[in-house]
Image 1 (tube, rainbow, N blue to C red):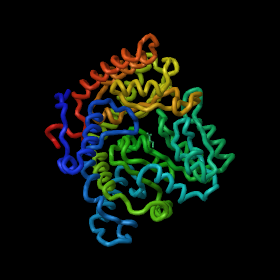
Image 2 (cartoon, rainbow, N blue to C red):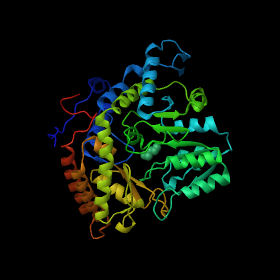
Image 3 (cartoon, rainbow, N blue to C red):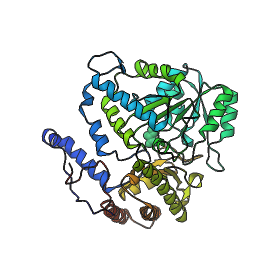
Image 4 (tube, rainbow, N blue to C red):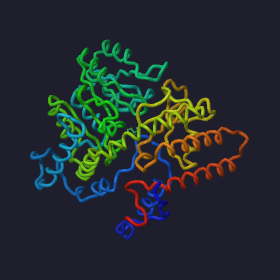
Length: 437
Ligand code: DSN
């Protein structure tokens, strides 16, 4: 166990001197990220090296186009950086071709549609209610508005993707694109099966691995690269890079996808993000990162089992990856109530619909939690047991109708204090502590 950190923080002098208002917000957020147990499964702690590269002077340069083929001069270092980043991504994921310019995951997916389907043509994806993403064809997103979106789901019996349904819908509707990817799905995705279905119906299969890209990079989740045509991802979740996106694909799709990103959808790439991503991709090649990814999965599994022991009901009955989806119906609280009670207790997650949820999205039955961030700060299986205990306590406090509001708030504060004491033992990567900023 590491020694406790001091509870005060220093900040980069230039921000403090020039803009104390912004500096104080950053300082407070730094304190929040230190003192809370962060369980939002799409969040993480980027390393100091990634943060410094992302905050560097690379932000000052415009560079529309691709390496050695740009619309502005002065690209000597930018070309070098982008080529280095692309090569590292190819090494980490084994992809034929990589585009590191998408601003994030949604623009990456948007570029895929632009490249591979005409408006009005049919696309398929996992529904948001079953753990997919807005950009996989949800009707409120451009992907569901501009294309004829067919949505598949998970099986009620075991919470797993209904591959039979995917196949029959694909045969019936003959989509141009089948997206396989998730944001709230605790099980392995069978990319090989999706690829086989795509081949059968002549669809391009696109795997969105935004949540699991760190696990794929480390080999703890099966990779889609050998099977599917195109892979999209964000770079800041389990991969622990800066906020950004990537598209990886087979050679045959390289040209059309590159053109869709630029000039089809975006202007100049965010070169500071490319710098941060290059650093993260160097980190992802280390043995330490592989160990980290394995620990993410171990922690999630131990946490899932500890929660089940305490009577929590988990969607699909457990997890294969970094993520756990909890149905709180039997605990007498809604997802929103639990998420807010946990936040008051120093534990941060998001409320989330569970498959076949009868409740609305703004007050659903479940919460979604994950282990990438807490594993980055060094939490292991002992901490998972404590965490499950606190979650049980908070659920009991929130559902206990005999408690008045102020007693309940006081009880949450007591949990938050214990949480902070634990966090003090685990300084998080990238945050500012007394002696190192
Ligand atoms: N907002 C992300 C998540 O939390 O899963 C998906 O883009």
